[in-house]
Length: 328
Image (cartoon, rainbow, N blue to C red; front, side):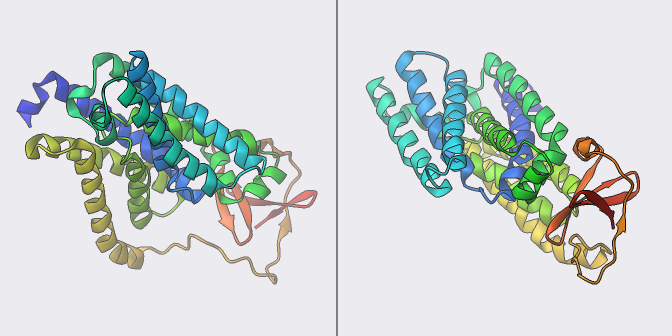
């Protein structure tokens, strides 16, 4: 391990891998909640188009890939919101159009498919110092937004219609989710690779769901598991002389398998019900009058309760009911 830390390219690779391991599950948590687990794959293929464009124009691949992927993600989300195409069709366009355009432009640039290999599956030696600075900036932006807006983002993922009734800006936040997903995909293309980044966005979340209860614990647990998988896979790929991205994903799958083994004993030890059935006979008390602003503050916990959402704050559980709040 000491010899790895003495190599500058490995130092950069480990730092980039750690940041990828944090931000991919951070945005992956919301993608899984929205049942769009394959979104990362589609955005990865659009990023290939960005890399091909960078090779064709002789510019730096990472900034071009970031811009191209964000534009593609926004276009597909806008089409989905306006009902002009289904989510599945939008993802299909991302899959096939992106990879075809990327390979075509790489061929025109004289690189061919081989020139894209480092971006498709990750490459330890391809992380430069300038890439690391840009990755760090983008990672901070993703973490600030995914953590700072977590109550609202979770609300629209749990029940988009009800969140809209509460006055949450659902369309803008949906756009934000896909934009952050696009950033996470392109940031991770050096370490995990564009074809495998979706696994790092989804598998640590599934692992955390087996081990933790509650949104906040699962959210931060998934990021911790992502870091462990990314660092272990990066070190393992150095000693095994294997593709970085593939080794990281295999490590994440192994951690998922371990979580399955631990899930049973953990469930038996927990005395917690994560979902509360809302019975018609249950009596609710009318809560004190207050406006909606409290529901959007960072300290408020959002909990799914039957067919609606409760907001927990200051020791109270409140739910919107017509023109007033019920206290459960």
